[in-house]
Image 1 (cartoon, rainbow over the protein chains, first blue to last red):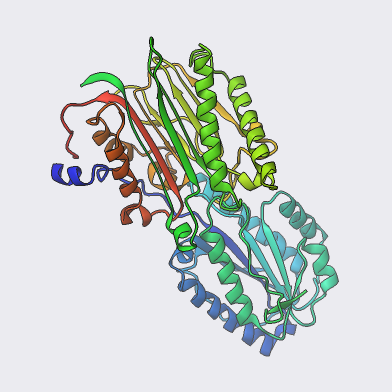
Image 2: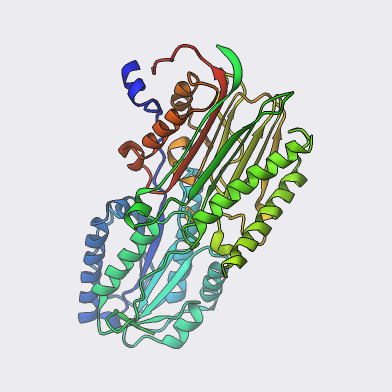
Length: 225
Length: 268
């Protein structure tokens, strides 16, 4: 050992083993009746792509944590798990569109997760909530909107709303602080590739105040404003 | 073992992510022995991490380090002691650095925030050490050869892993951490955020003892003053695959010891 030390004087340093910092993301997906048929098929395929894309990034696999909530009824399909454990579900269309309750549920599981990070000494990135809908809320949503605004204001989260054809953008604009994005055609695949790339970029960022995201609203992009 | 003057090494090396992007190292460091004709030898050291999001972050870090070392020297030149460095002194130093970066920025038609960087400073006298810090990174001290390495301030990261505070921010003074340690410090390390993950144990919120033991052991056998050879070894260690596997950020380490050991202590 002494010989190795002569050659590599500082080689004796042993490293601390720390958990990877986490990048939490909640997918808040509308599975109301109107999504039936092609939209739901494309959404399911999009989720598979999402998993594949994240799998291609070794660091993102360990750092990005995905939770999935569907509505309605509001159901926590899968709670936070790192991307390597996330299994894309096969979603079926069900009832109405209780978007307000779904958002509140998302905020609740996010708060729990943050507490778990804190008590385990795990550092984390600003969480993302990613809402995808093709309709309008069928429940009270003002309280949820207030909390989303407060969360954005306090930099406690980033809330993105994506409307599929038929979505009520007036309401979405009142819920999200960021301009809601309009999904072009049914390009869920491109949307989830973008989301995976964005999360990968965030999860490898370091002491940068802001991570520049790829603009999805270019002519070739999946979204329109 | 005998007690002598200070021996120290310092290195800043580029992170793999910056290297890939064709960037430069945006960390900076400085370390000096202040040796008046009569009286104690005093160690002054500074490290800084230029913000990746700032166009001149690396320049800001270099200028901030130089400025802080200059301010520490000026304090000692005026005949004042390490004990006399207070929170107010540190605040004044930070304001001076802010003003300096403001001027530098204006001279090249930029804004102060374009020079955003963190700053950590340490000045060690015979029986007192002053520590100051804005942003993340960490200062680690040991009081005697036997005693454990302990951090002075836990890195100030803000809530998220990718945010911290910079000396260039309007309210930087509010994020200034200052401590005057009234003990005899025998070993000290300053490091930037790029090494935090391997040097600190986050769950226990403590300095990772085996990391620092392994680094200080070779330093104790060095000559007094700055060892260029060992500094090169330190830079090589910081760019080694073993370190790069754990961090892709720029990394800076300053190590100083006034413990001398005649025989190299073999690693256990």
